[in-house]
Image (cartoon, rainbow, N blue to C red; front, top):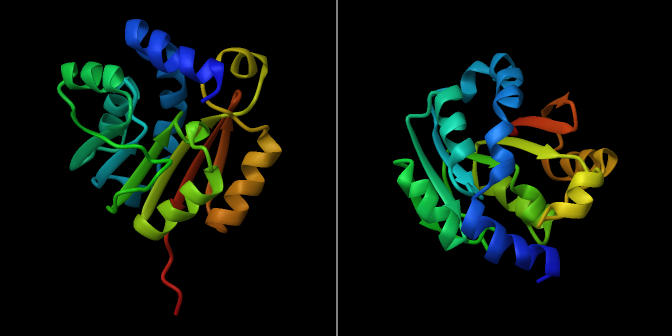
Length: 183
């Protein structure tokens, strides 16, 4: 574990939760009209849910039938439970559950092997929603994960997802993927 990641996991998240999520309303305001209609009313697995702040936003925007947050950090899971969310301890860098729709909201950049994680998600979920920051000075200095530059995110999405919808809002990429049956 890198030093920045250890500090974030054991000090930052323990005492402050996911502070950066508190200011994400404008991002979700941008996302709302972009959501494909067939992404609504799904059972959602929020992979890397953190303190649940964005999980609540995803639940509302996607009008989720059910949403379950997954994270490996006990401090963050405790905060998410206090928001009334159903959560499970789980490290998506090791494996993934199987379900209808996966959401990676500012979490995929924490995966040790992003390509493997995303390809596994494609196998285990029909729908995938991704919102990830591109590498910038803030994320290079302070983030516990490893955001990629925009070009590398797109290469990863092209390799793992093949066909998807993508939008950019400020420094964030928003992706909607739906598995298509091959005939």
